[in-house]
Every structure is written in C-alpha cells, then in structure tokens.
Image (tube, rainbow, N blue to C red; front, top):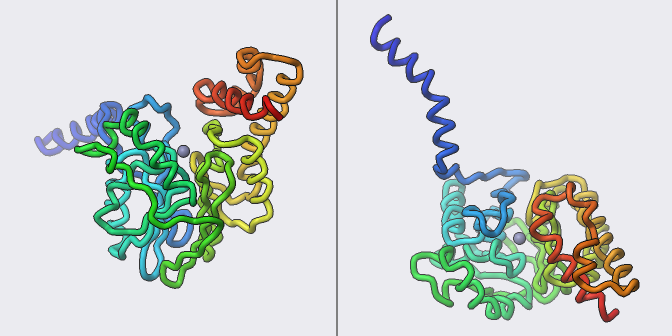
Length: 312
Ligand SMILES: [Zn+2]
C-alpha cells in the first residue's frame, strides 16, 4: 500500500472521530439560519435554562428582506448573538437595516440590539417598551453583565426610538410589514410582526411551542389576545420559542390548553381556600411530560397566576 493511500485511509478513519470530538468539545457550532418563506430568515433558539452557557441563544430571531431595506426581528440575548445575526445578514444582503424591532422586553430578545447601533436603524417596539427597558437596565446589567459586550454599562441596553401604540405598517421597499401592539399578555410590551406578502407572523413570546410558556404579564390578558388572534389569516407562524408552524391557530393549541388549565385550576385552588404554597405544589403536575423546562418555570407561572386571580 503506498504512503498516500495509507494516509488517506487514516484520514477517512479518523475524520468521524475528529468531527465528534469537535462537536463534543464545545467548539462553537455554526450560527443556524433558515429561509422558511421568501425573504424571511430565521435563526432558531435552543431550549436551555437561563443558567446554561447558551442562555443567550434561546429565542427565535431573524430578519425580513425588502427591495430597499431590511427589518430585524429580535436580536438575541447578548451582543455576541446580535453580532452573529448581523454577520449572517451581511452574507445574504448589503441593503441597509432600516428597522430593528423587538417583540418585547425580555433579555433573550433584546440584549443583542447594541450590535446593530452602528447600522443606524430605527429601534421599534411597543409603546410600553421604552419604559420597560429603563426599568430593567439595572437588572440586565447585574444579571447579564457578561452578555453586554466588552464595556457593559446602562447604555449597552438599547431601547426603542419608534413606538407602536396599536398598529403601524412599515415599508421595506415593495414589502409591507404590519406591527401590532397588544394589551398586557405574556408581558407588558408584546408586539407581533406580520409580513403581508407571505402572511408570515412573528409572534414573539405570545406563542411558545415545545418550551413551557412563561407568564410575566397577565394570564387572562394572554388568553384574550390568543382568542383575538385566531381569526387572522396566517400562512406561517414563527413563535418566540419552538418550531415554526403552517397550521394557524392550531399552532398554539397546546399553549392555550396549558394556560386555560393554569387559569381553571388556580381559580379552583383559591376558591377552596388553598394557600399559594399548596397551589404551587398541586397544580398542573400532570402536564409535566408535555413541556420542556416544565420543572424550571411551571411553579413561577402558578405563583404569577395565583397573585393575579387572588383578588378576582
Ligand atoms: Zn423569550
């Protein structure tokens, strides 16, 4: 056997080992990006806990390309993720980024904003978003310091300079997107983005799939918004977390059933005179298998629901 053939066989034998070592050894995987509809690009988040090293990459984020410019929808949970998103945009288009839209105030959707500052976009969000960002600055700085770039300070967190009261249409050049702001639901600053061409909706965290929904706003408000959204004509839904879906409003049937269970069982517990601790330990355990990270977030949801419904 010639030396070359020996070398080649060794390479072929060793390559899979190298590959698995590279994957297991914590080398960064390439930034995933898909195009689920014409001109719609999606980076899918991973389902890990807030304490995981990948906690900054848990949300679905992405962008829409028009004829004149680009709109970014959510920027991820760190400046690094924001930069990776920006790099992936530049591999596809050199059009200006005219809008960076945040679907709500949570860290996993907004802390990457700083990476887009040099592109000079308008930062867009719910009418409540600017206040929400201001109220969260210290918390973000304390909790996510390592995710705010090389010189973290209060200004590393970029809030909106264009706010949406109810609904506005933005033109990306022969491509209109419709932004809708909602009353308190998942959070106090929920906003959806609908691409009118492809009827693709970016729901932000109004919709969770696979990963357990987390309640930070009002349970009854959230259910009301989901009810309202049902009669929209949607071809493709991109949830804040979880897989995309072409089956609207079935897209969020599991979430709706979880939230309804939370509502009904918490009401029952309150009516039966249970204390918060008893309610937390008894409600909704049977749904444990259906959701990722149930263990980590369910109790908090019950607590939140209990304090909302206590004084009904
Ligand atoms: Zn989220």
